[in-house]
Image 1 (cartoon, rainbow, N blue to C red):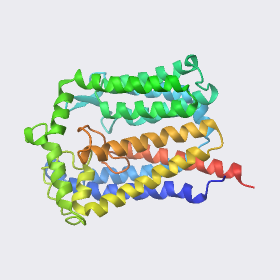
Image 2 (cartoon, helix red, strand yellow):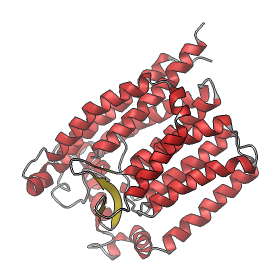
Image 3 (cartoon, helix red, strand yellow):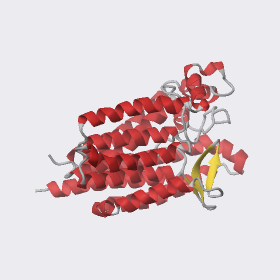
Image 4 (cartoon, rainbow, N blue to C red):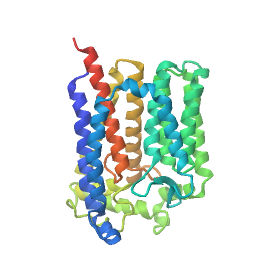
Length: 366
């Protein structure tokens, strides 16, 4: 059954809509803090607007790129991903913030290698497993080692939220790739055991769990951010307090332009605005799933699965955190949160999804 061209263009339209919403909300949520800290109310939004322009270019590139080239370059892409993740630990190159070393500072730009590596891994897995279906454990060793290496380097930063995204996406791609059911169940069990252990070995993660259970026990420390997010979402009501009229952005809500930008959306645009944004994400993710299901070959299916899984998981985790559905953890909202490199990478990924749909339609045309 042929994919409709509507599915292709839904990817592009959803991506552009989310990015534009992001630019508006970044200005709203950051203008006050940017004026105080940088003497420029447009500090963050100018960076995002420039990244959006560059993102359009890389998205178009993703739309027309020969997907077989990515398949041929899978090992190079994977090695680059690993190297970038390792570079953050080099003193003077890796940039530390709030106890985490997740950024590479080149002087003129700062970016998170994990933003690139998580998708680099998905490209590698799709290319490798298309040629080596993981039908037995021996053929799963390379994909598991590759995924484990990326997860290990990311958790060492530390960045548990992105580690979980990558780990869950790895399991999905292995399942779609044809891994034996018994081994798939073992992987799920391993993850269910590993997550509590990762929480226990780090005291600050236990504090976050306790803050999640009862944030008002420590309202000025561990529970502060979640409480401020509750205030933002709760005060928004059905239709919000009005665009640009957030009160929580006046230095009450930390990372208002980044990890907690959805809280500002809820405050200014209300439940209706939140549902609208979630609906756009749902359209984008559903289109990605449909593209994966209708793809012409295993490689395209696994590539679309991996890319869509990262988008979906990161979106779900971010919204779940700001709404208090899961313990607090730092993860930006795709396409919307401030972060130029992140926006460009996600827009490139949207281009790849469009590309897969385009190839599928072309090959199934009468």
